[in-house]
Image (tube, rainbow, N blue to C red):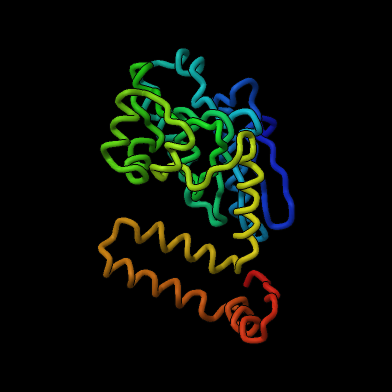
Length: 259
């Protein structure tokens, strides 16, 4: 059974906050990875969860994968270990409910890769991001090279990964790695505002829109637009669609039911 004491969860209405909580720097070991998997599997089954905030707390997000665990493992463990991490991070990326990362302090290595698996990233002014695996004779293996290149472009991704250097919040925002900036220590408040805005929308439409973007990203435009129509059809007959249209005409707030 996964040790869920390494990760806390808090719920407020339709929003769940997932808090990495492993002293001292939220280094992600196998137990923490497995706890994250259990939590996101449970959240996926809860139709009343409309948005998720993922954070490491007010001081830092995560220093990355636990180095001491790497030192104790044989080289033959590298690929299966990273593949296991990829599977768990894919749960975050494919979560039915959108996931907003609240990044205070630093998000490095596997911590940065976890933030990149989220739908939206909020960075505090004192935040920094980096993939320093090259400094330890390694290569980012939990989706970092692929997600980063898609977010900031191939050349900048190469610069960050090949030098192992961190970038500060303002630069991350300029490049598109961070979607919103918040005051120092204030990423959580800003992330909750975004989560609240998402949770106030018809959840089936939110989920369909997220899926349309993800599935169409690498398709030719014409095929991607055809895919959009699948999701248009999916939500057209929902109760929330009918109620939202009526509420707009009647100039009132819709009473959403999540169906």
